[in-house]
Length: 386
Ligand SMILES: Cc1cc2nc3c(=O)[nH]c(=O)nc-3n(C[C@H](O)[C@H](O)[C@H](O)COP(=O)(O)O)c2cc1C
Image 1 (cartoon, rainbow, N blue to C red):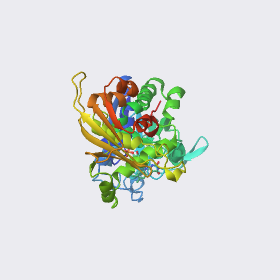
Image 2 (image 1 turned 135 degrees about the vertical axis):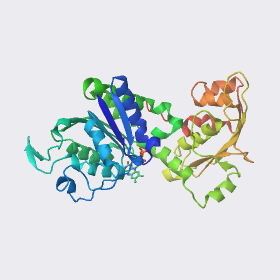
Image 3 (image 1 turned 180 degrees about the horizontal axis):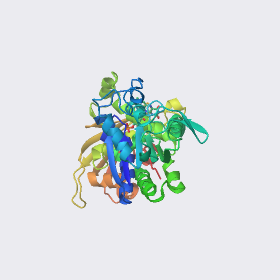
Image 4 (image 1 turned 30 degrees about the vertical axis):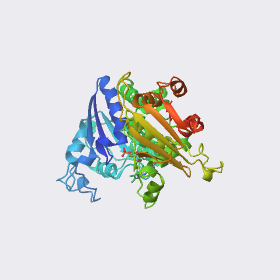
């Protein structure tokens, strides 16, 4: 069985779409299929001119002769299963994917004939059809209804006798797929995508059990997801008031969003992302006095008892007005200071070590407002997919 997948994200190999598509294809290969991924962003695809030359003067051949579409249409003709993988853009496929789909027109004949209870265009090369189709998408919002127009598009696109939509994988909160720091927390989803790939090859379609997992959001509570998303945007949106905030926050250098869970720099940056303003008494939520605090991390190198020093140094979290930002440097007046070897706090943050017990055993020490430390679980709730 040959599976050809078209990735329509302008982000190509760095896309969230790829993070679902690749495990799906991996599963398909494990079950014996031959697979190929084509990144539309790397291809020259002119948009359809609507001239119908491919139906009239040069049947089956488009007027755009110098782009990559002829080879891509041949890829489709040769495939048993075609995967359309696209981010959700304005409730539907990306522009790249739409141009590509519009250019499928030479594959069909112009005539309108009745098949079953509907009128369709028959396919030009009858021997190459029917085909199985797969839709893979992800979107930025947490609710599934954002996919409704896309689902309807593909229901119609595959409703004729020549195609059968055998799998639909739609992932809400899709931006979380690309966060390296959350790799483990979203593995249950990519694992289900891999299973779906196996099932399409072995059973012809996705089982209801796997589909049920694929229909689950990466984060159950939309409020938690929106907080994570907004914290991320807050950390990357350029604002003139950033300068003032920096001065007020002690002059450290703002930490970029985390790229792993292996360094203290990333762990502290990640704490700012998962910060819950409600737990800090965000005044905008009417939950009382907003917490104002600075949490300083004084991170010493690995003690040698464990491996992995994880970037020792000075980092701090500045909490004010329902926001939390992470910095590198020494704050002059921290509310709470945590003196810890890097590997101890890394182990706590991975859930391998109990924070309270580690403190009582002297594995790390604190100065200042211990009450703040006790609130850590509420202030920095961990996002779990399962
Ligand atoms: C132009 C544009 C339009 C978008 N429209 C939507 C939308 O209608 N609904 C939604 O939930 N997310 C929307 N998003 C967010 C993307 O679906 C989201 O960022 C996704 O994770 C991108 O996937 P990718 O990394 O595979 O390209 C849009 C993003 C862009 C850039």
